[in-house]
Amino acid sequence: MDFNFALVLFLLVVITGAIWLLDIYVLRKRRAGEAPQPLVVEYSISFFPILLLVFVIRSFLFEPFQIPSRSMVPTLLVGDFILVNKFTYGIRVPVLGNTIIPVNEPQPGEVMVFTPPHDNRAFIKRVIGVPGDHIRMQANQLWVNGEPYEQAFVEKMSNGTQLLDETTGNVLHQIQTREEPSKYGRAWEYVVPDGHYFMMGDNRDNSLDSRAWGPVPESNIIGKAVGIWMHWEGWGIPSFSRVGSIE
Image 1 (cartoon, rainbow, N blue to C red):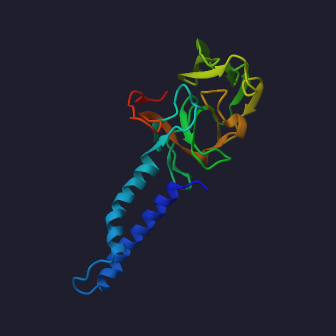
Image 2 (image 1 turned 30 degrees about the vertical axis):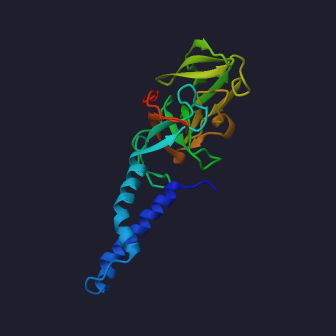
Image 3 (image 1 turned 135 degrees about the horizontal axis):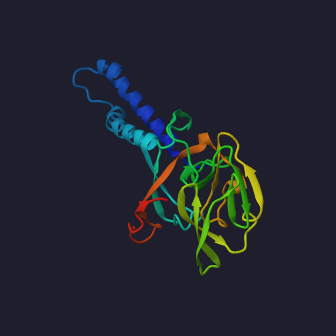
């Protein structure tokens, strides 16, 4: 079972907060004179404000993530540490994910963090289609609602793939794909259902995404990836050469 940090943090906030309130309204009155606080009360009072601050920032403002795979190459590399804006797409109920205050809706071309329908881990991909969009793939070329997402050849890579500039929505970014289309790059069509988003990795032939497990429900959205703040692959010295915004 995967470790659910959000749920654990929420429970810690509730428990320490409850002990702090219990001490204010009940335990202090029962303690005689200058009797010391029980250790659990002392720790709860000390940690509750810190835990609450972390919980609020992580739930409603920003959350850090690390890129674990090559599915977003060349935009994001393994070892990139990214910052995710949690309120871009609305204020959500912590842990549950339901939107309580809508703000913006995901747009084609934006890089989004979410949990896919088949897994409770966080994934990161690019928004390709929004509710109602008709998506068609033909020879590695994407068409949405009858209009192609423009592509331009950049260079041929040493691993046999090619680098292309692609304009998804209003966002110009690069993708990596084989010259000969894989099974996901040949011919297929799909209509995005209401309340869902079609996601794809920029490393088109090395990405498990909506082509494999379907569209992402709106309730599964975590936030918009807005920037890289560090690169570290777990060995050596962290690098800050890739710090910048994500397109």
